[in-house]
Image (cartoon, rainbow, N blue to C red; front, top):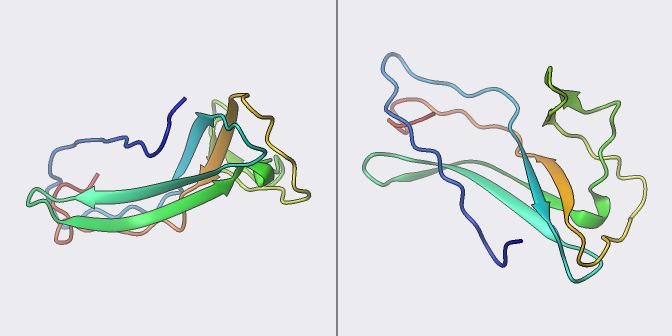
Length: 122
């Protein structure tokens, strides 16, 4: 369980060539609990260049009480992992207090980046 904000960082080498474009779906899954009947999770994807410049790529959010996914509209990979979650939004369902739940959400729409914008893109 995390209290407050957390950060997950991926560090990669610079991409060479004419540029890199990210055009695929981006999703995130988090396990969280709340002491109340609801919670809100927010993910922000940023690229940090070698010079320290930060470029916002995209962000996404999920409200715990509306976190049920529609299995007929979600996209899954070969292992059944949701790569493009899509919410049902049928009814507000309170979050069970003090119970760890899995929350899947899309970070969309994905932006694009080029080596000119962020040399360490990827």
